[in-house]
Every structure is written in C-alpha cells, then in structure tokens.
Image (tube, rainbow, N blue to C red; front, side, top):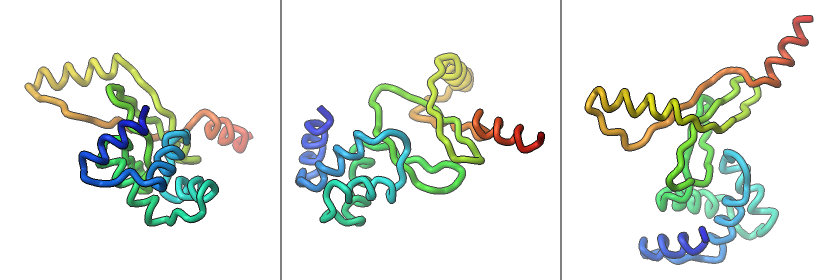
Length: 147
C-alpha cells in the first residue's frame, strides 16, 4: 500500500521510483522505532551493499518531503526518522540516561491543548510534545546503586 503511495507521490514530484529507493522505503517502513541515518544505512547495506550512504540520506530526505517519514531531533541533537502515520498523532517520553524513546497517545492532553488554543483564538497546524526524564529501567538501576 505504502509503495503505491510512494510511486504516486514521487511521480508527482517528477522523479523516478527506482529499485534502490523502493528497497530503502521497504526497509525503513519495516523497521521499528526511531532510527538515525547510520542505523537505517546499516540495515539497507545488509540487504543491498551496492546502495550508498548518500543514497539512503537523500531518500530519507525525499520521504520526509513526501510526507512519508517524520524527522525528529530530540535533546541529544541527533536526527532520527520514523514512518509518518497519516491521521494519527503521538508524543514521546525520552530517557535522558539510556536514550529510550516511548511513544504515547493521550486524548486528554490533546483535548486540553485544543482548548487552550481555542481560548486564545489560535489555529494549531501541528505540534510536538517531548517529555524528558528517566525510564523505569534506569530508575531501578539507579536505586540498586544506592543500596
């Protein structure tokens, strides 16, 4: 399904849906979590070692421009990519110790944000919520070190 959307969007841009781009798209869409360029390239090179780092980089930029990937920069400053999910929204909890990223959705938070915007006559186009702290596993490790 996404491959069809990719072919349509890429042709609208006047570009070609090359085999390399399609391989990168499939690997990207089938990888879990928030991956940086190096991690995605490592996966791609296992499948097709002829695909270069620059091709992966340019394809990720293209996927972002086409709305099929979302580029994220968290507090560590590293750019990560995740497949864009149309019509849905999620926020992130980021552990400052181990770097774990937890996605979550909360209708109550979304309702509150929309209410604040409405009260101020503000139209929201998009937003991001990133909460930084310590995950459960790191809290447990820290607790053991104190004993």
